[in-house]
Image 1 (cartoon, helix red, strand yellow):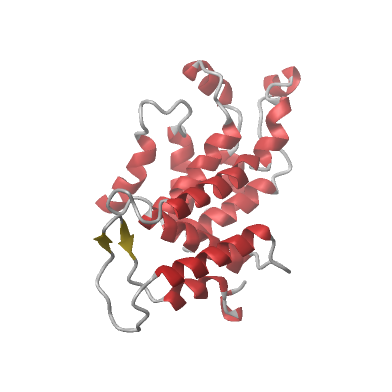
Image 2: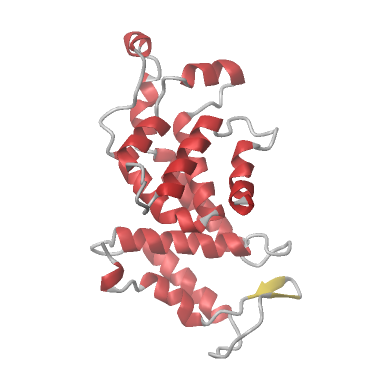
Length: 235
């Protein structure tokens, strides 16, 4: 479908100023996994994790880009986050893939890379996707700050999709007790619900620009339900 192609096209044709964009292979590996997830032809998360995090070709990436910002873990983390926010229907697949990456026993390397200790210092940081947690925290905060503009729908959709991602995360990995990050999200959703007016259950028009911000048209309860996942939705 053309719409699907257009969504993934952003990753295949990154901004020329981006110093360490995802490689075409990384984009294709993620796309094939995400689109097959939940189907009869689903690709195993473990196989995708191994391929996506393989360092066999990483030396060529470093050589081609000739800069000091090439970072496999951060590059893949941004790809996973951006894909989850741009295409929220793939969020469950992406969460499953992140779990598979973090359970890899080791990252695939060539014999030469192993012999010379290439990337040795970064292996654990990349395998654990340490950068992803930082990206999630910082970017979610930015989505919150930009939820009403300043440009039409800039930040609005990202904020909703980031909340959906968090809801999928809580559904897949319900915490025994909420930590500070989870409480922060819950309180922000309450604040966001309180910002909405009027509080009615009637059908409302799409968000409209009012003064310096967009006003949401959803019911307050819609947002609180995201942190109140029912038992039958949990694995």
